[in-house]
Length: 131
Image (cartoon, rainbow, N blue to C red; front, side, top):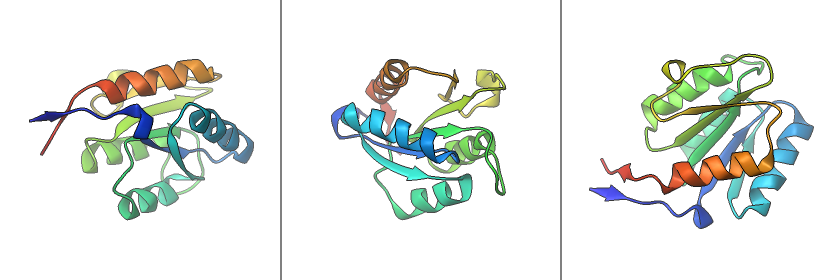
């Protein structure tokens, strides 16, 4: 059975350790109509995902302090919450689809608000297979 998410009611978890960047991304996504949650690292992001059942997408930077980087966070989210859409970003490294969870995408920094919003909307418009 397939179901479709509507991005007008979608929730995005933004994971970014640089506060100014995080606030900018949060504002940009809220302006586009998303509900947005934020975390300053992977550990906090995992706790948020465990506490909230309404997260539809994860937007995470790769380079973060803590017990894991954003790429490992993306992989864990892909395994544990396969219906959560994943976008990974970085200003330094480039990654292939093979390094990301199934369906995950990589967007290099700097990125435009329009590009991130368009990618999120496209991902959320794709069918999700109900378990």
